[in-house]
Image 1 (cartoon, helix red, strand yellow):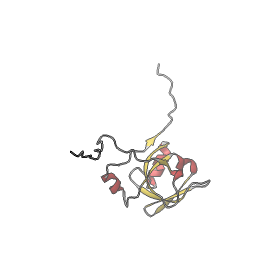
Image 2 (spheres, rainbow, N blue to C red; image 1 turned 120 degrees about the vertical axis):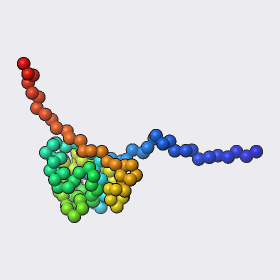
Image 3 (cartoon, helix red, strand yellow; image 1 turned 30 degrees about the vertical axis):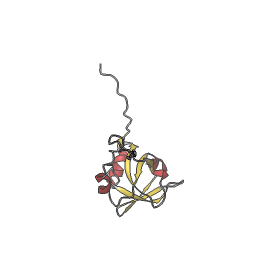
Length: 124
């Protein structure tokens, strides 16, 4: 009588969590997608107007090591301050476009806005 060993079946509930790194930790030539951010409403609006949002992929042209972080989104290069780049979380990506990552079920989260609202006095 022989025993047959089978490979363990993957647990469909347990999924690997995609790696999320601050933009400042990426190196020149790395491709990534935006995975989230803690930005003011104004910063978020400016970045979206320049083409950087939760649906785009980009290439790092210059990492932030002491100066601005420069990334390329499509045909546009953006210079970001080290402080701003540190607050943008990324997911490294080897995919040719964002549709590839979305097809794998790894769609990115929406950018979070951390806006500090002034407290208003209670209405009497």
